[in-house]
Length: 172
Image (cartoon, rainbow, N blue to C red):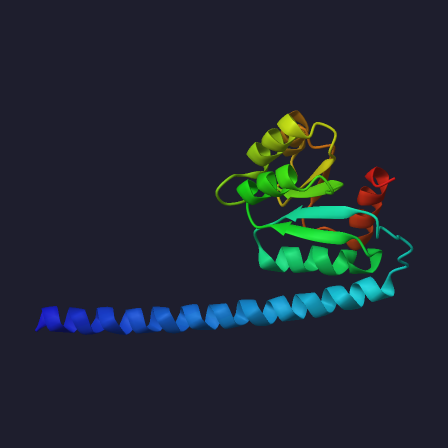
C-alpha cells in the first residue's frame, strides 16, 4: 500500500513539476515580450544621434532577454548586429568576419566563458575592442576582464545611455 501510495505521490509531484515548468516558461516568454516593448519605448524616449551604419557589433550573449534588450537599444544606431550565443560562437564569428568592429562580451556563457573567448579572440585580432558585460561588478571582476584584454566594462543591468556612450568611445 505504501509503495503504490508513494508512486502516486511521485507521479502527482512530477505532474505538478511539469505544470510549474510550463508556467515558468510562459512567464519567461511573456517577460521577454514585455522587456522588448519596454526597451523599445525607452529607446524612443532617448535622444539618439548616433549613426553607426558603417559599423558591425558582435553581441556575445546567451540570455535571450539580455540580447533582445541590447539589440533593441542599438536599433536606432543602424549598426549591423551579430549574435553569438556562447563563447565558441563568438570566437568563430570574430575569426571569419573581419567586418566586426567591436564586441560586447558576456562573461558568463555556456561552452566557453567570456574570459576564454576574449583571450582567444585577442590572439588573432589584437586590435579589436572588446567590452565586458556582466552582472558581477566587483573590482576583482573588472581587473579580470582587463587582464584578458577587455578595454571596458559594463555592469548589468546596462542602462541605455551608458551603453551607447561606452560604445561611442571606441567607434570613431
